[in-house]
Amino acid sequence: MEGKIKIFLADDEELFRKGIVFLLQREENIEILFEASNGSDLVEKLKTTDILPDIILMDLKMPLLNGVEATKIIHKDFPQIRIIALTSYNTKSFIANMIDVGAASYLVKSSSPKDMLKTINEVAEKGFYYNETVMEVIHQDILSKNTSRTLLDEDFLTLREKEVLELICKQHSSTEIADMMNVSTRTVDGHRNSLLQKTNSKNMAGLVIFAIQNKIISLDDSNNQIES
Image 1: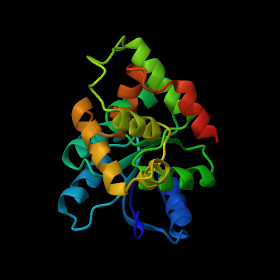
Image 2: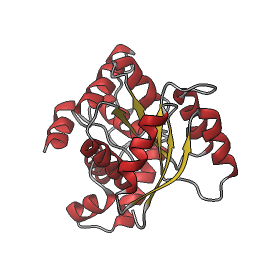
Image 3: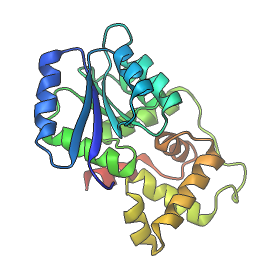
């Protein structure tokens, strides 16, 4: 991503929120544009601002409009904005629900500043970032819903599209994929847009879920890449 990463931060705990702001303001590539103490103020700001953020750090438990409902609204009205769920809760149900409603990543408040910065930078560059725990939750959520399926035919996706999908699931950026495939980033973006359209996915999370459902990529393959 060129330029600074523009951030909105929503959290009703002022001391915690100010601590996050203090940490992020020290980063040369990050700019905090707005702080909100509840989801209603956040959504209202998005509707009136001239400069939208690239990423929103979204607390889940807030008054007036909680983070889950705010994420649903923002994902629908501002699909280009990436949302990082920020919460004290690390339960599988919370993670699965936030991914389902469109979160690009999931960050527990007990995480280190290093983990937070890594998550922000990964989401800014690649559009999403799921660590091993989140990938496992996605996999288990698919199994529990019994939504496993197979492709209608072998030609549903081209070989190139499958290759790009595998690399997306392994959390490579468009630039990295282009280098690995010896093609332009524009070509990679074209394949990615085709994948979104063919699979009826709204975001990268949808592509990951599709790939796991159709056994295009295994969970072990993805985890190995995340750990490397």
